Amino acid sequence: MTETITIRGAGIVGLCVATELMNRGVAVTLRDPAPAPGAHGCSWWAGGMLAPFCEGFTAEEPVVRLGQQAADWWQAQGVEVIRRGSLVVTLQRDRRELDQFARRTTGHRLVTGEDLAELEPHLADRHDRALFFEDEAHIDPRAALMHLRKRLEAAGARFEQGEAAPDGPVIDCRGLAAQDSLPDLRGVKGEMVVLRSTDVTLSRPIRLLHPRFPLYIVPRGDGVFMLGATQIESEERGRASARSVMELLSAAYALLPAFGEAEVMEIGADARPAFPDNLPRITRKGEAIHVNGLFRHGFLLSPAVARMTAGMVMRANETPEFAHEDHG
Image (cartoon, rainbow, N blue to C red):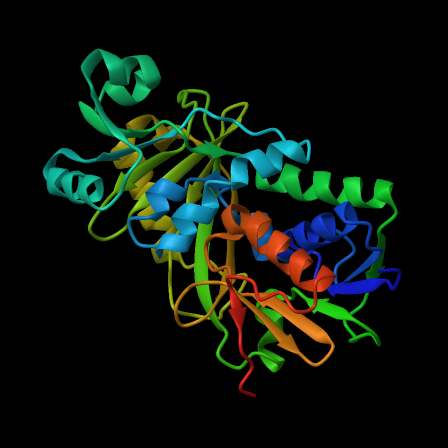
């Protein structure tokens, strides 16, 4: 294939699709309203957890299966992948939540006492048991976005700033902005807080199960932590509510009171694009292929979805797993 393909949207999905196409020798142009990755897109506010087994608590089977490919893909692109697993804990009064989580997920083992203290000394001071998902990993999503963009630029990909739909073959990866073409796409709002603390040391993502406001904390290094994330059926973007921020901070304080003295560096919010079944779709509409609906699994599923999309482009008769028939 010699014709250049235009990718609309240079967020996580667009960058991954561009990477897979260029790996197959296809020239690409990425068009996005923003000049570079930043706080305008939900990719910027992602946790960066490559945690397919934990996601299996609520997600469908393909998320667990395909998500297991993500860490190797990111590492192959030159992104730093931190493979220290993840831990799931509860407060003392919510122990049944941990038992339920264990029953509904795989890939974990129970750690207590000295084993937990060896993994996370600060956590073991207040918690006596946890589920350890040893094969999970995490990345810094902002660094990953910038790395993919620079790598694509070095390989000859063109980046244009704009919103207009181009002529010729197009892959539409605009996220929630694609509602003009995908009417059943909805927004699911997520709010996050970034803290800095010199009193807390964590080396892997921690999930706190809670009946009202579950929490994840992802270490970014140098005492910086990402706290997330609410999940609200809303297309509102860019505004975090006081209630949500207080709940996130309260949960972090309950997990480790030392977070009470942390510096609040950032508060962010955006809406994740999702379809009714919360699974991605690859939809062909004329000359355009729409890749969308990754919900809360952008960094986890984009590699697999990008490979499927590239295969569909290179072999026009191929029907990928997430192919969706357009009834519009």
